[in-house]
Image (tube, rainbow, N blue to C red; front, top):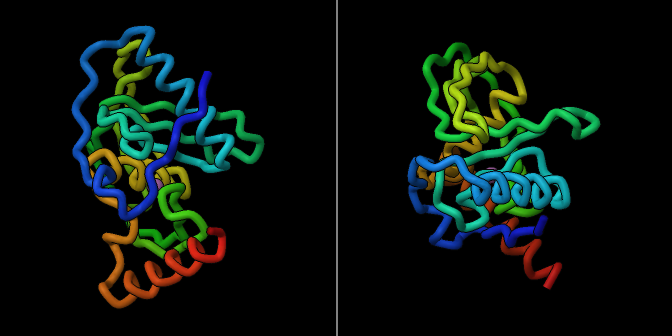
Length: 167
Ligand code: NI
């Protein structure tokens, strides 16, 4: 396994739209394994392939307390959405900054697993936030896109400051 480099905002590659996965081979399994390793090491609770500069519709997530419930969704699409929740989100492409984002409370998602088998999941709460956030990455969207221009500029200034401090 290998840790992959995570692209950080405002890297323009984060705006790339991912292509659907058509071939479920060993290379895909390796990508998924590497994405899990990268996510757990960061540490983070979700990672989209876009963030590691692979523009295919693959995301991994694990919001369990003991990091023992890995979830991989390939070619995910939302079938149904219901309700509203506001949750404080972060993103591995925006190290150290967080913001409240409004998203659906419950989602029904269809996807494929790493073997290409069709799955349908009903997800709600924080994991539903995570999946919606990661699915945004696959269409070139990032969480600050959901904020007002004012809030976004404050947050991006904070990101700049953090970067200077850690440089
Ligand atoms: Ni993210």
